[in-house]
Length: 509
Image (cartoon, rainbow, N blue to C red; front, side):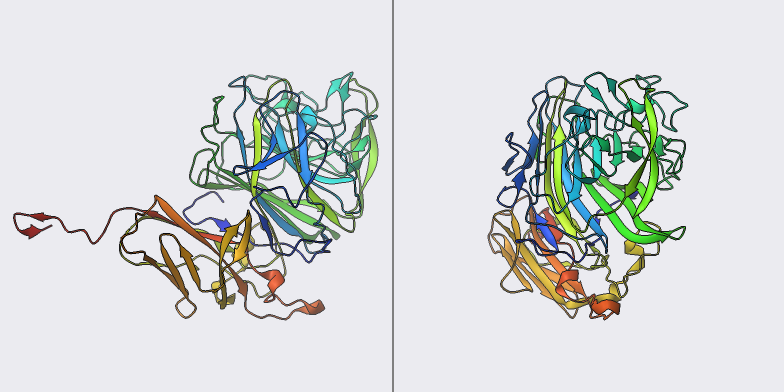
């Protein structure tokens, strides 16, 4: 499923929610201001023009924040998207540890983070040192590689994947021979837990070694199952691009080698007559989209087996049952940690969506004329939906069609105070460099540059759209505002003045 993209697919999906106070869906936030968020501890995450800095480049630091005013149900599934950046540090080329997207029980009013360092603020440190309060799920973006590891130190021991080729289907890094459980650059999902129990590793996939992946055998608690390949074309990329201590890539956006964007899909479904959720994780790195985890099935209200620690020794483990049961509501947060090595962890541009909202694709145009109008086929690769049935395969976009988009529901947007706001006139957006006009009949945009304006390197506007009206069972209408799409981007990168005429010996050339 690997794609080199000029248009980025942003599948809009989220679910009908219980709104605690502020949130409306779809929900989007640049994470440049902390007004809507609560801190997990007195060691504060900072919010600025770069996004939310979870940790500075200092050793032994664990910080995080969560959306206290946003609680949601899981019955209709969700997609969460966000940008992240790992940059800076003091000990190149060694950087640590990583960050995690965490979901926890929405009834918890004062959640406490989990273990520092390789615990990424989610899992417990020892059975007497609790993990994240009533945690349900963590997606670990684990650069150092120990979030999935079965730690066995006297002051830090937790369940996970043991080293040794017979203990899992993972492959060790060349410079960490025999340390499969500590292999770097992994996307790891840990599951449900509370206090000093649970939080088992459910599935993990290396991003640098396509064949290194494993998942929990729910019947035995072992890691002897190698999942099917997440896509046909192998990938190999690091979770962090820069190998230097500097932060010159701190503004990395789409197309920059350091750009990273994660999409976490969790869609309700049935497998082997069991109800649960299909999980898929996509990542954009630079301008390439790769599927890292595809259709991992997480059962709901089912008891599984996992190996829990019974002592600090790596062989001191005992099989235990664990009930996987989604709470009535969730809250969402981000945590990150450093240990003996460090780096700056940043998250930004958070998006949450209803399922089967239109899948809109961002439009990036290059070498645009500075001085004449430009036509933009803004919906060329976007699709809408006329049903809410997930058929599997990990790709919602393939189930949609452009004919299901409502062209008259188009709305331009702008960013004010770190939040997306609709423009006063839905079909018109004005920037300091020109005017964008959308035509619902042609479904195209015309950009008219301001006369005599000094044009920037690039200019951009934002947009959303809805499905056409479609009434389904249980009073669901795919055309209502809760199913409005993700906010798409139109970015024009300017080239030359196309009206310039150069005269040579009285002739134009």
